[in-house]
Image 1: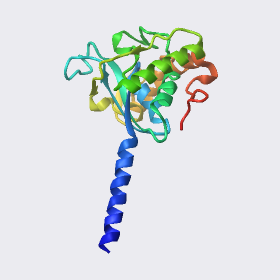
Image 2: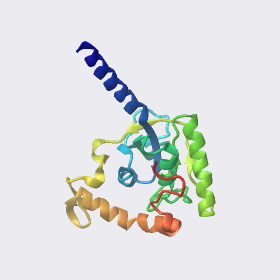
Image 3: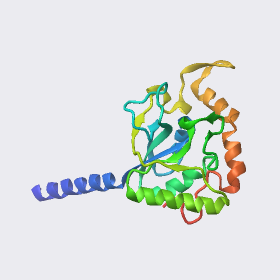
Length: 212
């Protein structure tokens, strides 16, 4: 009985260790973090997303004061289901990769497209994903690779904004947060621009680099 219990306990520990080993983190910036979070939440293998501010040096940035940071999303994913390389390649096909001055209707340094690698392996794979995307699109990408792996969570009201049930005041009156998000995304022409730029590859996994 004691031997059986020890075997079960060892198996449980091994299972937990394997799960922890398969859990990885990526940081992507692609304009409004509400939109990036929504897009990443729909990828198989992604286990959680957090909107925030990345790539700066000032401590504790806020929505009102985050100079030097760009809006970004921290993505936790199961590397047994999708690799960092595949996730990055997919992310690039969800943004305007040739606009380095902002994204869609959001302009300025807070909205630049960027990859924020957390280690040397991710940096190599980020650079490779950019090179492959340039070849696929036939244009030079304006996506930065930021070597300051800082990330601060955004305020709670920004998290899962696209699903929010709270009422917000808009030009349409008081509407649900989720409805305001839809109007914002459509009004900025985000999806239309991505599809015009990437064609059938918009929001897709590139051949040979899809989900594992």
